[in-house]
Amino acid sequence: MNQLSKAKDSFGRKAMFQRGLQAGFPIILGYIPVAITFGVLAAQGGLSLIQLTMMSALVYAGASQFMGVNMIVAGSAAVEIIVATFVLNFRHFIMSLSFMNDVKETVSMKSRIGLSLGLTDEAFAVSSLNQDKAKGKYAVYFYTAIYLTGYLTWVITSFLGGMLGEVIPDQLSQSMGIALYALFIGLLIPPVKKEIKYGLIAIIAMLINTALTPFISSGWAIVCGTLLGGFTGVFLLKEKT
Amino acid sequence: MVYIIIIGMALVTMIPRFLPAFIINKFIFKEWVNHWLQAIPYAALGALIFPAILEVKEGAPHVGLIGGIVAIVLAYFGLNVVLVVIGAITTVFLLTI
Picture 1 (tube, each protein chain N blue to C red):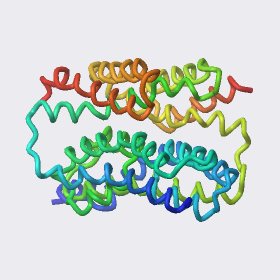
Picture 2: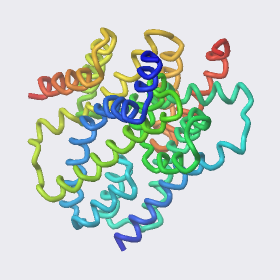
Picture 3: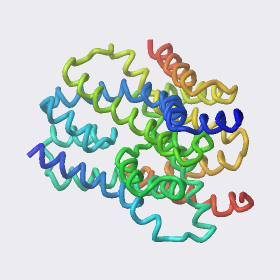
Picture 4: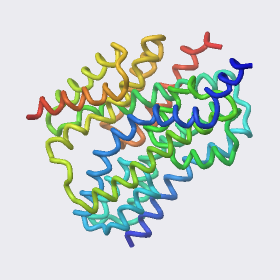
């Protein structure tokens, strides 16, 4: 009896949420410098505090927001900016497809839609590679914690960046540019240590992305690298049940 | 005008994000498609890391590269992701002093 209630506890709502916060914490660390930089640049580019916070709250996709601000400052046409944003962010469609396929049994459609709006490279990577920590009917609390911390950090910190200006010294914010890549590496290495083929999939995606980068926009290059690199999984992950 | 641009950017970003949440139940994927989708996180990480990591410091690709190698080593020794991130930041900070 005692053991049973203990087991239930470790997969209960609160436990799941806390575990999600833990898994999502590195995202906070990675987002803060980037979001502050975005806020600072957007404000310098002439966006009002409301506009730049709105962009973070509604678009919520770092690279495309930097690009959007640049293009707005350069006086590009609205259509041009919107199409470029679509191209740059289309990778999220593939990530969302992969994530939703993983959680379709455990997460209701309503919750899935809510989560999907908060899907970023980082939230996707953290939740996909920590799935073993989310079990049972409260798995959605685990994912919600990850997605929500990322979202709130991004929106609040961009606002602060826009309001306060350069609160982080240049030298430090430049050094923090490595943070998101280090997060990705930190997520990728543990599964690669267990199964080298995951590393092979990643390296093939890297090579495809690198090979295509001179010829097509970085958005499509990442999409192609992800799709074609992932396709090797059809052969490499065959034995896995 | 800026508001129209922001709304437009939001829509073209949101729609690809939430579409899979709707359609995923309408398909029963063949086994090989499942394998494909299972490999996506690893492929996406690869494509996101490289070659973009070389641009951490403009005109100095070795800075991002060394930061990345430090991250790989720290992660390989089983350090928590937070420490991996802090270690890489410290490395780049020291390299750019």
